[in-house]
Image (cartoon, rainbow, N blue to C red; front, side, top):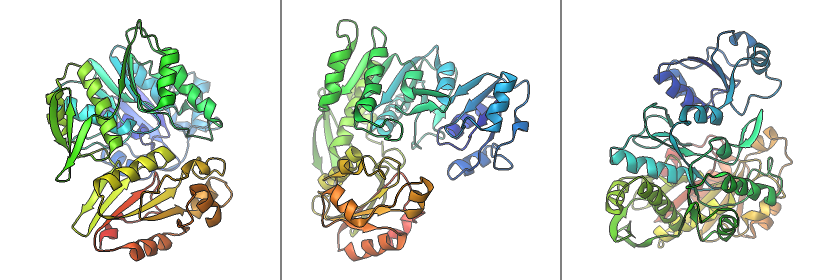
Length: 450
């Protein structure tokens, strides 16, 4: 097949393009901006566009499909040309469904934790020698790409979020996949630019639960009372299989978390109660797929996490450096709590960047109140360039301290201020936690350990 990607540089789009080329398809693509790691990976596979920008001349009769990324706006000349020619068009979740329509589709979703749960399932199934396809939103150790489309696997594990499928298709991605079974890790309002009210955001998960077929397995985090109420209200326990989960029994011993699951026990490398919840969710999926509890714990012992999810970049006696993707309030709080639990006797320095549209919105900011309270030293960074790019009004230090409910919060508006804060906060035994869906203005994280 001949396929063209509009906005090929996206985190999933470029992985899908690589997977389709590996499957033998002829793939081309375009984008107006492409950053690493997508740029380097596309170049390595011969898929990097020769020039940036849009060109309607790339869209020619005979293309078997055009795949749209989120940057394919209505006025995109390539999109207009594809419509003019009447070519088949897919959002990337539509194409994933098209590929996996004859497979068992298990979708992992929730406002936080879905990448880690998906990665844990992938790791365990790989260790067990099982055949499966997958889509995940981060780089996972042991997997060369974020997407696998083998064509002969009986099951596909899909990380699916509630964000829109494309500018042309306003459905949440997880509805497009038409899952047979789901994992829902929790619900915490996000994407304020798309879901302006909390009620509208929660409604997307209601639609998901109501869309599930008979005999679906619904794995859900029971401590999330709102989620538990949604499942109770909209699932059918007479025809569907409900699997509520909580954190399994565990203890910290010699820096490792020792876990018990249904009579089995094992030590794992991931840390924090939220990752114990993630582990339990992953186990329930693997159990559905025929794995025994001890085999699962033996497999997951070697799992070190997905990229940028509690990723330990440095571990020395005087400094542990952890990078995490946390940006939504619930995830920031869970990440800080995990670092505090694991490193109870260290000086915990927590730095968080407000980078997304939601996190930079004055209406949303109060949701961060108290989320970093367990850290000894706390900083919030706002990049003025990111604020300007989003055409938003600048935030002041006073507004940030009030929103976080923290008069001791240090507020930084330049990379140099971040570095100065870290230098002044260091002691003899520190944990430095860097949380962002961005990059702290291109900060060299490795240099923080020098």
